Image 1 (spheres, rainbow, N blue to C red):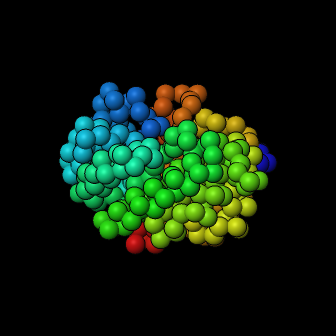
Image 2 (cartoon, rainbow, N blue to C red):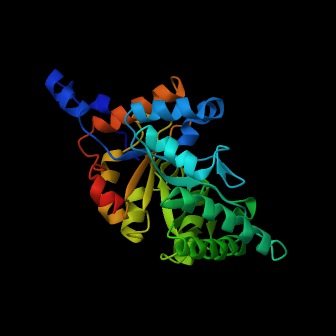
Image 3 (tube, helix red, strand yellow):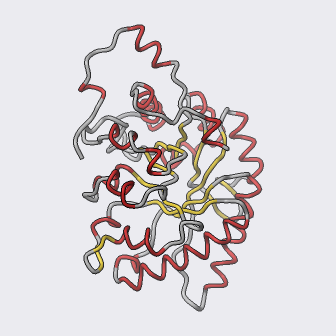
Length: 290
């Protein structure tokens, strides 16, 4: 993808910067971005995330019916006390065998109940096991599994989805990328996709091409760069945001996995970058949360 960063534009006047600083984006943070901070002090970390301007969080710390070791409702309340909504989560299990299918589905029942208690809107599985990348039958099994999980989530009023990395685009079966097989083998009513804008580019594909071919399937975006947003000069966020409506994206979630600064500072700088870009349109909170 062609490069685009704020540094390519002319310097902005002080009054223009002031206006940008007031731009309120309904953008969330994937808490994996600050995982070490969350492990050290959940309360202090959520306070810092809220103060930096993020409006909601997506977790990456579910286990045994709790979020980061905290009761689901208590965690929701803690988020809200810091100006954050708890809207989504990353968690999941590898595709089960016939022998442990019931056990895996029981795990999902507990997981879904915990997230329903917290009022989340979506649960996203963030990765797949090796079998998905070994054969077409392997990815077909995952898609069947995801459809089953999605049906369970639907019954609880929660959307289920999948988050990509780059390998879904570099692995092909019968001349078609694995990611395309996933889009075609999953039921749109049961499975949506959280498109990671950085990883699709790393996989050699263009997000806009996927919006054209599979409109409406990408209900969530992970907005990511090599480090802080705009840092690499590689990401053409402008062309992607121009097609947000076609993609189906309702929520934008920042994720930072490598850093030039302390993780909390990197996350704040990434949000500030989005605020400085006129093309960013995750601003209408009412339409996004209905």
